Amino acid sequence: MSAGSPVDSAADLHARTRAVLPSWLALYYDEPIEIERGEGRHVWDSAGRRYLDFFGGILTTMTEHALPAVTKAVTEQAGRILHTSTLYLNRPMVELAEEISAIASIPDPRVFLTTSGTEANDTALLLASSYRRSNQVLALRGSYHGRSFSTIGVTGNRSWSPTSLSPFQTYYVHGGNRYRSPFAGLSDGEFIAACVADLREVLDQAGGDVAAFIAEPIQGVGGFTHGPDGLLGAFAEVLRERGILWISDEVQTGWGRTGEHFWGWQAHTHGDLTPDVVTCAKGIGNGLSMGGVIARADVMNSLTANSISTFGGSPVTSAGALANLRHLLDHDLQGNAARIGPGLIDGLAALNSPIVGDVRGKGLMIGVELVRPGTGTPGEPAPELATAVLQEAKDRGLLIGKGGLHGHVLRIAPPLSLTATEAAEGLAILTAALHAVAPIGA
Ligand code: PLP
Image (cartoon, rainbow, N blue to C red; front, top):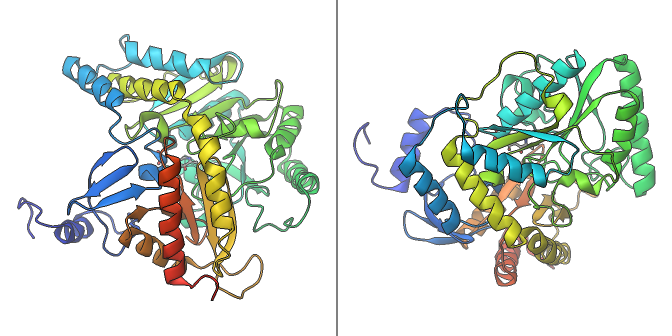
């Protein structure tokens, strides 16, 4: 291998990746594949092998790989002009913002487009601190909100937040992980009451000056964990009493992924009790670098300084995201997630594998918590088994994700267009992979 010479194999590319990119760049496999192309719910590696993609890239392929409408929109826009900046009028950006406003489900929304989820959450935190004139933030334990200094500063998952230095004074509360919680075993109502009591106590200790509460309705990197429906609404009532803003991080849960609702927060509340700010990214661009902040006008417009994102809302990514969003809505892919997901959850829960501690999720966002056999409930987290299952699944032609505080949770999040046949195929492969790691029914 040498700089400038063509890559001659996946192994060569792997060695060169390790030599030139940072050591902390996360890779799932000892021998990672190079994905060369995709179509529908499948991808092909550089050796021509086909895989069923049960992770949708990394929840980025929301509709399907190589969706013709997205390719057409991007190609046509790129043929006209790649980029101009928000200093000039930008038709695709405004059309996308209008489309997002129409489905935002929060009052009087304004939309600011970014290049990533991190930048969206950075912006939301900036807005909240400016609106409330405070740098105190409340977040869920185990959360992940991005890789910048400010978003790491509100990230509770220590495996993704290497420093405790933060521009924010952050307080963490219970509620994001029901399986591993001191309140596990309580009924929904009791669990919510216990978490609200914890929230009130933390707020009282903080002294009444908190700017915002930021939360993922289902924790993504945290291992697709969540509290009962209604929890965040119960929190929102307390926040509203104290004028604290609610930021819903929908980077993973937005765009119908959870099936029943278009946004994850909608499982938690009703009426006019909505988040003040919603952040999104990942699936909106179907793989294009796109994120966004949707905020009530008074919050969005509270920023008095000038602000710009050079590449946020670029004409090319906006045109692609608009085509993707229209396809998602026209084909009711949210409804498809609601129809296909429960069968997968039931199928996995029925397996009775000795290493599966918990199966949970909503729509096409499903977590399978792996534990060391015979270690009781909730059981010892088993990251080595998760790594082994990922490998066994890959060898059988299925790509899945992993996460959780210890990297011990399998994560399933295929494109929302997954068919019933593909769901059954993926379930069969995953069953075989789990069985290969720890025999089922032995
Ligand atoms: N918020 C959540 C809930 C995420 O899952 C992620 C990424 O995984 C982010 C924010 C950061 O998004 P990005 O990687 O696009 O910066």
